[in-house]
Each structure stands twice: as C-alpha cells, then as structure tokens.
Image 1: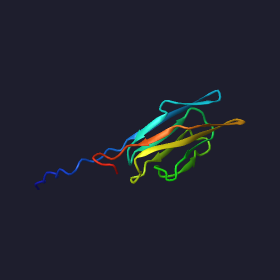
Image 2 (image 1 turned 90 degrees about the vertical axis):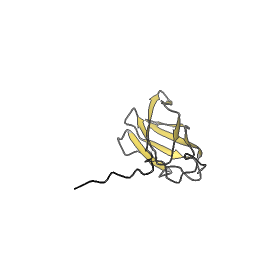
Image 3 (image 1 turned 60 degrees about the vertical axis):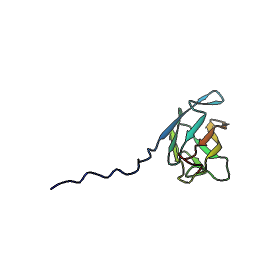
Image 4 (image 1 turned 45 degrees about the horizontal axis):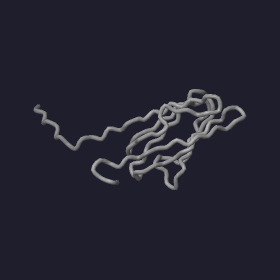
Length: 121
C-alpha cells in the first residue's frame, strides 16, 4: 500500500495558556503579570498562592472570556477561562477578589485582546 503525502494546509494556530500567579501580601494582591496579552482561543489560568475563596469578574458590557464572572470552587487554587473565538480586540479591566478571613480584597488588573493576525477582527 502506498501512502499519499499529507497535503500542506494552512498553519494551525497554536493556542496559548497564560498563567497568572497571584499572591496575597498582607492586605494587598500581587501578580506576576498584572496585564495579560491574549489572542482569541487562548486560555488564562489564575493561580492563587493560598486556599482562600477567590473570584474573577470581567468589568465590561461583553466579556472576552467564555464567562463574565466566576468563583473558584471551594479549596481550589486555580481558575481557568478561555478567550472567546469572537472576542473583540481591546482592553478589558477585571476585578480579582479574594476572601482573606474577615476582609475582602479586590484589585483591578486587565486583559488585552490582540487583534487577529492580518486584521482588526
């Protein structure tokens, strides 16, 4: 049996996973990446350094993520979201909220969705 060579098609877009390491220092939330630059189809994973309840809330009329607000499951240290395939390029502030004992800590980092290659999207 003779195998035919595979046809070269368009290059497959690689999906990227962006990890954001989050830590709590006193009453302050700190990140290794305060601003995350993403493309459509990418994944963002937030990792908190403590097993405390936390949430992410996108502060936009239309979220670029596959959800607008999400609370991490009890005891979880990570929360993931996929950037929608039809996300409009732009700047998206979000709230990162951590329940630290009696205090609710909130900070406002951002997600920047880059335009697709060769166009404005």
